Length: 502
Image (cartoon, rainbow, N blue to C red; front, top):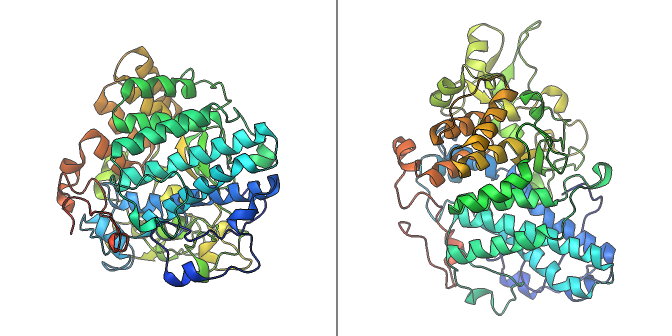
């Protein structure tokens, strides 16, 4: 969350994220920084701490180990790609469903627990902060909603995770045990319900874009309910978000008229956006701290770009910077979407452009010639100031947008006039005719509408389709629905590895 214009230094008693503590870090005496015991004295300090809670949301598209790039790679619509079969052991392993506790990127565990640790600390300190009660309640609501979001990612990724509601200390961090997934989901629901009661319905666009609202928390709760199989609860809460299909909801949200406008870099926090990750090119992000949480650019942009891209003079091909060729699109997705009106905004067919002599590039690993246009930057997006140009792209990314909630509600309802209207609204926006609402139709629509946005793998798992769709990738039912827990988190702790992994 970068629209609040200051950074914060935060030193806790023992840990920044669960399992990332070393003896040297525990023993260090912080100097020149606020300690957690005396930091939260006023609203300014609490606001700075809240910024820290928001920072973990950047995991969606920030850093090499980002949620969208990783989850795309493990679906049937994308390969890992990159420079070779060893280019990013974690993303390659998930793409072929050969992850182990050694190669699974630990940041998918640590980064989310870092956000949870910060939320827990702020929630603990808020009662004693000198600030208005209504502001305090809003901060608590935001912290709970963010904690719920981070736990939702953790429970979907790892299932068997510790449920931490207070900051860990050096004395108890190794005594933590895993909770049941049911207990984690119950806490997620509780946090979101409490957040919904206190969050504002809208925020000032010029100063607070990106802060969570009541509608954002309701959308996330609907997604949580649907993932749990609580369809009636999901339909009820999502109806509050969606309003009249195709119209403007009670919070001012509506589908954009043009699907392609969703991917215009300057079109941040538009009316379709419900939860959005803010990136900036002004952070001077550099290799020395890339992926540490201090970098503020969209790393997925450079990751999905073609390698050594060029175009001859006078070519009508897009003017692209070169990238690293991750998340190349499968022939299966290409064939499924090639006649859909969303094709051009979703896929850039460099195979065809190269064959026509309009562009050239060097194919990377698993190259198909098809690239994810939703996140492909253009030359005008390249940062010319400080830091590494590759790490300072400014395109925001959606965690939840309105078309997603339309289709989730339709799925929760399953049939009927309202489910039909929700499906029709998504199709009508791109000029497609009505089709009878069925689960198969909704599944197809989610694939076409949300391609490349990191949802597909979780959808396949929820539908029970992962084994059949990913059998050619080595997917094993009952095991590969979740990640193995990083080995380093098991060492010296009471945590146990997930079933099927060693």
